[in-house]
Image 1 (spheres, rainbow, N blue to C red):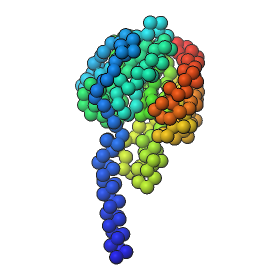
Image 2 (cartoon, rainbow, N blue to C red):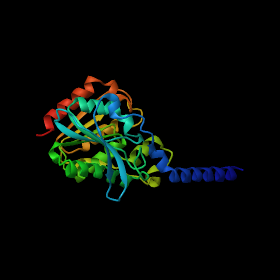
Image 3 (cartoon, helix red, strand yellow):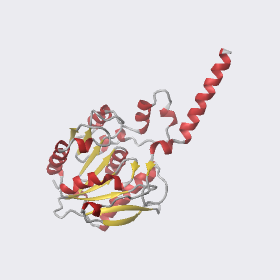
Image 4 (tube, one colour):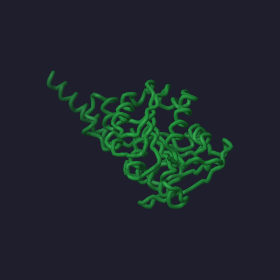
Length: 270
């Protein structure tokens, strides 16, 4: 009976492993199609764009020009929703006199295709190419920003390009590192089809870096943000905010805004 019960438990565990392996995409990406608001709803002028990626997909993007532009921010958002859910952040950067290009990954919003790790990197590359080739904006005026999963995408783009600066907020070390932390009873490092290994890239990025994280983050542990900062090559800065994963930048108020402003004034157009 004991042996029989053990066999049943092993088989049940193997079924769980197979289930997790096959559903990884749905456990990582949570796209929404409905663009339920646009920048003009908040009184901000914008251009509605369709960009073409290197592998031929069309992705949706918005370009929000700042009246008194000090630079341009390329915004890589997180793994849930779409760019319509980032309006509060767009308002903050707009108030800091940054023009913003935000895009939806493939499978999000109006963008074609379905999300993948290599695909999200190509999507960010298409946004960069639009700024540098179509808008003719020099790299020393572009700041790359990424929040959560977007931080991993932003780090990959910054490693390949030469932006003025990189800002990563509430970002994990890698998908396997985060998964092992969240699911210690699973062999996540063996099962994971995804890398998004920011920790292995951050030390290779030469531009100034600002790492932002909150000790109250309930999804991505604070120590992962601190480790990213410690692994970063100089010049680098760390901004500790407060509040949860999704609302920390809002709860932190002036602490967050002033931290961004000080970093941008120091490094943008240097």
